[in-house]
Image 1 (cartoon, rainbow, N blue to C red):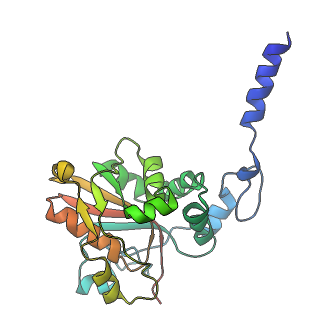
Image 2 (cartoon, rainbow, N blue to C red):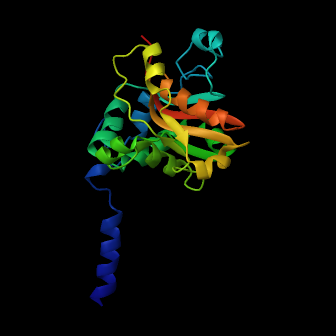
Image 3 (cartoon, one colour):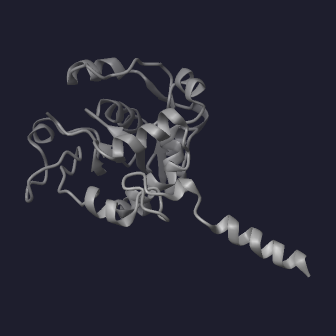
Length: 239
């Protein structure tokens, strides 16, 4: 008579939120990694440039930089600006291996206006790849974890490759960043035909200048992609 009761208790205890279920911002419990109150406070929709996702005054479709020099992306969407509390959450995923945060960040992306449509319209989601050296150091690709949470059946981690390791881009100006990542990406030869004529969505955690995403997009466009857009969790504001 005790065995069914024990089984029910085990299931009940397993369903209880653990310590990781406290909100990482305000410590509300039980909650997801980011509670609804903090999402409403820190993830309010912001009008952004359609090409690079930088925050803009309402009514402006694109920033001056993208008007002067259109990037190789058909569209770019960002959920939040890179700053508190999202910088801490992204760092915990990337550098402390807290893989559960990939789900919370994917949910943050899905809440963003236009994101669900972008994911549905895309034929493939391509997480921005890490170099083999960085992947060995970290043990996982944080962008791939997020992309798999967004659309597991569309997520492709084998076609777009990072063939050259590059040092961190922090401290470099825009032109130096572009030069630094040139030639860093390629397509797996046996899978290159997968991108031809298809609608592609690049996925990344943070966009700073856009140099890395743009270089990946150029490679995909050269291979015949019908369209290339980007979806990022956080966009670094311009000074």
